[in-house]
Length: 294
Image (cartoon, rainbow, N blue to C red; front, side, top):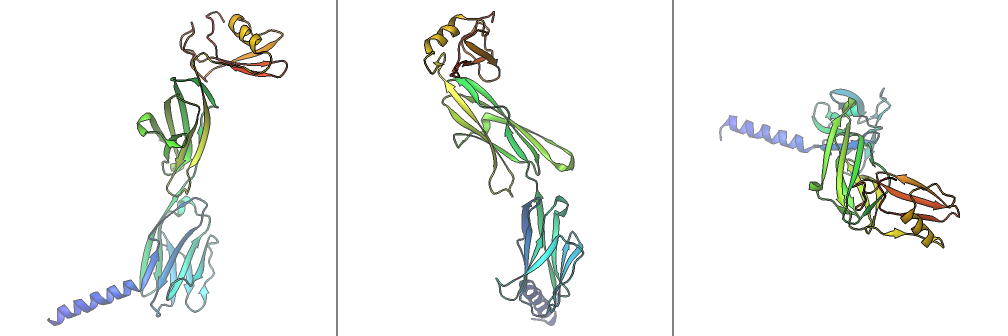
């Protein structure tokens, strides 16, 4: 082996040895806005004297091997001595992480080596299923809408019925980007009513341990079924069958729209349902074909 090749081999071995003496972990860190970001810089090189932490190229914290953490003008950063590994190890802590903190975090052992990690900051928004609990006949197609607002990056939306995931082919998703790079996402699900169920919409980003969830209850009735309680059962059924005027001394009734689609009515598929309450405080809910001149 000639002298030049020997020098190259020695230099390469020295570079590998120096690199092995320093470690920054994790190499990639993703947190939610407002949470702490923690990175650990470790070295087995006993010759270091100063460790400098930089965020996107700007020095934010300095640690002296002899003195420890030096005063910083940035109140949002600190460092903790770690004893979990051999050699010297310091944990850099970024408190109350904000979106503008996203980027490169560097641990620089002055005159020895430096390592850089990537920091990503995500935003947790809100999620809700539009509307209230729904009523439907068995076999009907029931529409649901879910809105997730104020997320970064664009969240993943998933529907569940009785804790079972709905196939992605059964719903659509649309999104829009707002100012400050926030995303709003809307999803529409058309679900065939088979049995009474809990319908959930879940939204998540990778830094969120558990998806946010919004739920509604779908109550499924057989077509034409009348549910009644109390001593006035026969009177209520007769009233529902014959009367076209809900304003009587016995009953006070209202019409609610948007809950169900009646199958047999001269009005066609029109979303109407009765919710009635007796003056004696006995409540009744019944679904009944409505006359055209109601």
